[in-house]
Length: 286
Image: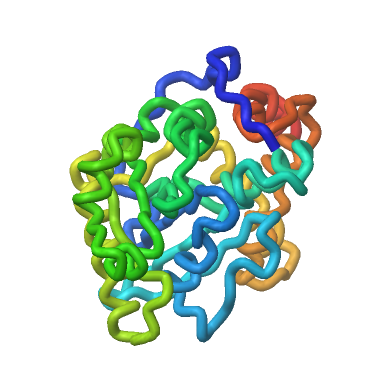
């Protein structure tokens, strides 16, 4: 599926802003994984959440969220999105799944983690930073980081990330647009301690990036509206005697998601192009 990146899709949602309050959930780290199918995205997600407990990737066409506990007692929430440019998912399905992705990330992600396999780096992937800007706003690049997968294979070939950046100008230019820098994962790592180490190192890099950005997760009008819808849905569920664990249902099916599904906008970038209409439709129900 082709993803439009022309300037006409620039969303009109005002400047992205970080709230002048404490992070709404300072005890969590939220990672939003973005990338093409086949780059090792789901494999990297499984490393982050310890695959012995649950698995990403059984259905690469849906948005999934899983949570684990970090060594410092914070929670790590990992949201795996449908593979961009996937040829078997319709524009309507992608619109719905990306709306759910926004809902699951609310009040906003701490990092947009673009997953790249260097050997398969393509022209499509060079445009991903621009796609993220058009979907989530220009300021999103301050929270964008590259996750280079299959680092063990690179090492076996005698290629380090530094060499890759030096000898591949187009990849170097791409990484330079991601103001959070990059991290390398060994997808085939079998040692559990080494797996934990590379996840801890990734989280440390995310923490440093977030601190440079004021110490808060990334948020804008779209994420704020999704959070309000989640909160209201949770309140209604709990008021009806539903268990507190209904948060997953609230994130997957709330008034924000339903409003996105009802908009005429179609396509990945168009999901956020219709946010103003979504906000108006949602507010009418209040």
